[in-house]
Length: 286
Length: 261
Image (tube, rainbow over all chains, first blue to last red; front, side):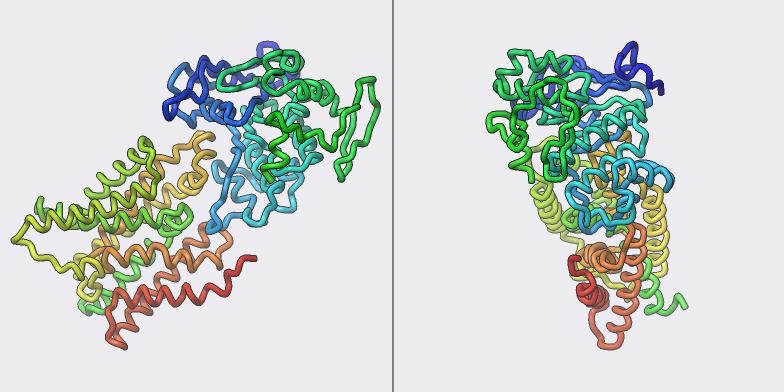
């Protein structure tokens, strides 16, 4: 696993690709004519409105859904780590965190401990999964996926149930995982603001690919502006520089060195744009 | 000793309990109690088929399972109806079909009560051998698919990470049909379901790991079988129901330990 090619993406191995894929269910196309590919070391972020087919696309790539059109290719022997949007361990199943992490593969106690350490919940190794809080469980799911040392990590809205500062930490963690494992990452998000800073390719989905490319080009795209409104595009420009500051425990901004970009928007309501998808998470999903 | 009907009954009850404990854990974890009920209702169709084809009732129940299980999985995949609706259709449809077929065979008289509630005190040496051999086979297959079956409780993750949860689920469902087939003579098709559910439910509060829960469930089942049989001897009660009532008492006794922490 070479780390040298991560940001340049020169001749990186293609891990999974969908060519003109379509999924037809209940008399309509959930997704149609979608082109997407994830290379080793690349972070691809899927964005778009609810019902835009983000999860459907990811599931089609993983082979969880039958596609009705196009083709899905996965690298031979691809090792996948999957963090689904929802997972509910039945209360009757006595399962602690480290056991949950070894359900789909054998991993040593040391490997489990180090994965838990990476996501910051090593103290919860023996805790029954049903006793975890939403954020802890999300981290445990992430640890479960990365202990497999996957070639491809697929995260379906990993920041749900996580507060704003936790969200930033989680995104940093994901980019750290990418560096240390050299894996490709497919991230599904309502939230462009922070992902933008870390992501290599953004694919904006609304049943079809509205636009795709490096973060800047998405923010500049008129199609994207149409989908989310101009505020989101503004916010994106600012959020690209999130790594310039940190958030205190109360969500307040602790500035480092501002490099001239205006941080003039209000972070307290930065996640409540009512007219686009990003705001829904903070209000609806808790 | 095997000439003693009570000893044979004990051995038969223990065998059913040992197998239904671990198997029943998955029924509970995967919320498949209604599927178990469907399989046991369908067993009547299996027995009717056996009479029609002049084969062993056990084989008839297995054949019925081998038809109904894949049918259910296909319907679940390609129909918009929910799983419990489909199971409801299959459960009562197969039961009614079985009874109708019996109606056509005027030369056959079956003891429905024995069929529903079993007659453990009448178990023959041959039937005893069947339940031990069949039970051991079911347990061996369950042990073999244990890990993927457990991983398959989170079906999407397992499938995304290169496993085949649908296949292990199919095998598991056929195992349920098999345990019903070998034990219906003993505890009856209605009571086998309770042996699949009550001991695991009792074991839950004492277990810290899945395997622990399976072992405890088997233990609870064995105690219920032995205790129930002695109770039926003592008070001259129906033996199958006495086993289930003993299990029920143990379940009730476990409740105070299981208050949501």
